[in-house]
Image (cartoon, rainbow, N blue to C red; front, side, top):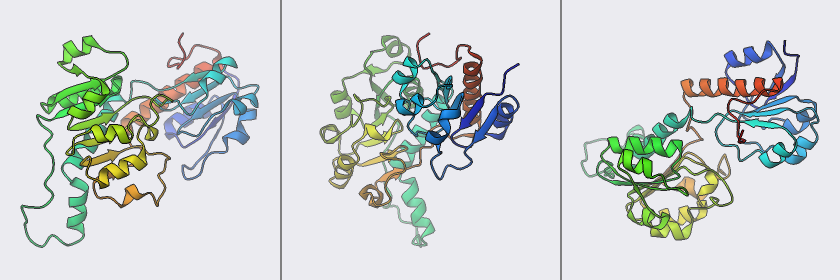
Length: 321
């Protein structure tokens, strides 16, 4: 019988999963996403922490929590958690890998198609009551079929994007630190250096993990390498792209358009010049935001949390066993 461990949840999670936790733990959940959870104030008393979002969990915070056994992150990325500090303190850290790959790949193509075919500005045009006659010379876009897509970061999500691209008869280039010859053979895709990928692709989609190496991976130099008709899609982390450089590239016609599901910071500043442009689409981090996937993520986060509180290995640990 699990004793009543104290658990804090940093944002609202599905009621079904919350009810499960409340049956076996002393649970407090922050009931809004509009303001950051007071995790720093709560953590000293906790046995377990379920994070949902990207508020930093630092070594200093962990040092104040002598009973903290596990941090269960409801999401794949965990760059907001100091995992080195957690490991040194014997705190287990879990995430929710795999479950959202297809959903995020779907969102990648939703962004790609929307920006390539001017879906948002044309919808805005109709709603503005300016559509008073049929004009065949407005909102010409870019074709997707038979185009070349360059995938930067070929993990689970990148792999899922490649499979969808092949369904559009696209040529697929990919860049990854560790080349996957088996995927090249099974999918018929081609490895390229980052420079060649940027120079050759009509669409560039970004899926690398956030790290010091990938911060501003796409900057002024890289944007200048891209085709003037190219479209950039970032669904990884906002910091992968230099936003100021992206603004200049869009204004100067160095690339045709961009679609961002992530920004730096999040939310993006309301006065950022990117928001003044018509050739960019920005969404509020919706990559895995479907009912089905978020429910699966919540269940995985629950399983990690309970395992950690019980002293068992996490089913989805960020550390090597």
